[in-house]
Length: 88
Image 1 (tube, rainbow, N blue to C red):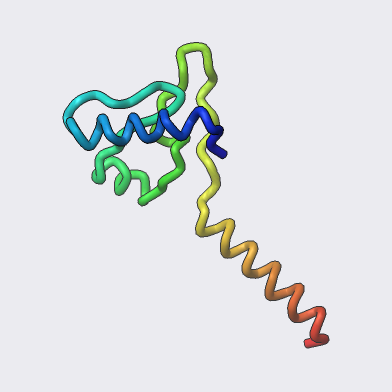
Image 2: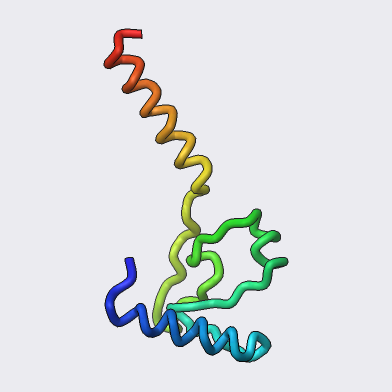
C-alpha cells in the first residue's frame, strides 16, 4: 500500500519518465521503468518486486505468486463454500 509520502514520489517519477522516457528514471527500492519486452519475457507479470532493484542494504524479496493461480484458488474455494451452503 502506498503511503501519503509515496504518492508524490510516484507522480514525480511518472512525469519524469513521460518527459524523457530514455532518461534513467529508476529509483532503487522504489521504482523501475520496465520495457514491454522485459515484461513479456517475464510472462506478463506486473509484480513490482520482479523489476525494482533493492536498495544496497536490502535483501531482494522473493517473487510474488502468480496472480492467476491465486485467483483460481480463491474461485475454487468460493465455489466449494457456495456448494456446501446450498447443500449441493
